[in-house]
Each structure stands twice: as C-alpha cells, then as structure tokens.
Amino acid sequence: MQKKIIEIIMSIETSCDDTSIAILRNGIVISQITHSQTENHSKFGGVIPELAARLHSKNIFNLIDLTIKDAGITLNDLNSIVVTEGPGLINTLQVGFLVAKNLAYALNIKCYKVNHLIGHAFSPFINESKEIIPIKAVVLIVSGGHTILAIKRNHQFEIIGSTRDDAIGEVYDKVGKLVDLEYPGGPIIDQIAYENGNRNFLNAPITNLEKFDFSYSGLKSWVLNHRYENKGELLSSFQNVAIEQLIIKVNKAIKKYDLKYLIIGGGVSANRYLRKRIRGIKNIYSFLPKKIYAVDNAAMIGNVYFKSKKNIKEVLITDDVKPNLLMEI
Image (cartoon, rainbow, N blue to C red; front, side, top):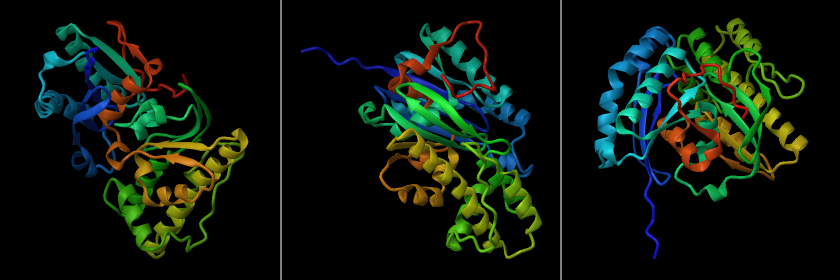
C-alpha cells in the first residue's frame, strides 16, 4: 500500500491592512491567524499605507510563530511557502514578500507567488475538493480595491468588465464617511440597510453602463446630495442600487456566455443583501466563500497552491511585488 504524501505549506498575505498567516496540510487549513489593523486606521477614515507597512513589519514574525504553534508543527515541517505577489499596496506587499522569500531561503524550501485576485476567485473552495470547481464560470470579485467581472475557463481568467472609478467596497466606505459612520463603513451600512429592508426609498438611480463595466462615482455624488435625508432610508436606498448594478451585470454575463456557474469572492461577498440577491438568480449554481474567507486572508493564497498549480509561480531571487497586477492569466 502506497504511503500518502503529506504536504504542508505556509501562506502569507499582506496586500493591504491585514497581516494574515495560514498553514495548510494537503489543501486543508489547519491554522490561520490574522491581525486586523482596522482600529489603527479608523481614526484616519481609511488605510494609511506607511502605517500599514510598519504594523505588518511589527507583527508578522510573532504571527508566524503563533500560527506554527497553533498548527502543532515546526518551521522544519514546511514543504513550501506561498505569498501574495499583488495587486495591493506596494510597501505592504513587500513586507510579506521579503519575509516569505528569505524564510524559504533559510529553510532551503521553495517559495511561490500568487495573484491576490486569483486567491479571491478560488476562495469559495477552501477546504473543499477541487473536483467541485467548475471548468467554466462567471467570476465576480468585489472588494475595497476591485470590482471585476471575469470569465473563468479552466485555470484562465478573462476580465470582461471592471469599475471605471470607485470599487464597490471603496464607495461603501466613502459613503459611510459622508454620513459620519465609523470606518470601515461597509458592514455598518449593510446592517442599517438590512434593518430598513434594503428598499430603495429615495429612488436612487441605478447605473447601467454599456457592456460589463461598473461605475459608482455617480451614486456617491447622489448620496452627498441627499445626506441630510433620513439616514436609514438613505443607506437602504444606496445599498439597494449598489448591489443591483452587480446583479444586472452578472445576469447579462450569464446570458451572453451561456454559463450556469457563478463564483464570487472579495470582502463585499460577505454582504447579506448581495448574498440574498445571488440566491434569487434562477437556473445558476453560485459559489460564495465562507465569511471568514471573504475578506483578505492567507488561507485563500495557500489554497491556490493546491487548487490551481497553473496559477502559481516560483519566486526567483530577483523577483519583486507587482502592486498593479491584473487578474488575467
């Protein structure tokens, strides 16, 4: 009887303001510890890149130690290290990248780099068999930095639409700031809109650009012009049409490309109203990440190593991060 091969990897994610370390054994997450910097940035109303990088540098080695201990292994048990290459903030990406590259060198193991967006695209399949991943699907990535619609064919992604201005998560935070909510505004707006039935009380306009692109700057301006209205009704109206724009484009892509599978990733995929609207789309199978894996996390980076070898590349000594990396492979 052939002995089962055990492969243990560490993954590192520092693309923005969360320092996240995970350990995966044969594709299953056995430990993940994430340090959130939200409290540090909230008083500024958004992420300060220099501060984020300093906090990553301060916390990353302690988090690696804690995650290793939590997994019940040692550094010498690692077969590989996987790290985010981009996109993201250049100085925060570099913290994780340099640590991963040098730690792998010290341990005499290989280091691999992963596209952060590809990580989100495979995040619904963390701790699942790769056999359930659809060969062809519409992919929607919705986060603080990205609003992207793509078509997945095997291990390749073709972007067919993206935001022309603000990403949806970004506009949630900006709208929250306009109406004096704490940062980050997204989860607070979701709760307030939920309590108000997610209705479009104020007839907020729904942006519907040609083809598959998105735009949220007009909706942000609309909120600015109506910010003295009833806050609950205003934010319910905002969320109603912000999500509706996503649903319109998803339906359009499903119809045009004649696909029955939909994959969603990114922090905004945790939004309750978006999940409700997705469940309401008929004749499709949708895959959404567990909420712990919706936001930026190291498990989704390590997960790509096991789910899609074609979407990882070995890190060379001369390699550096790519803050403007695209999703297309």
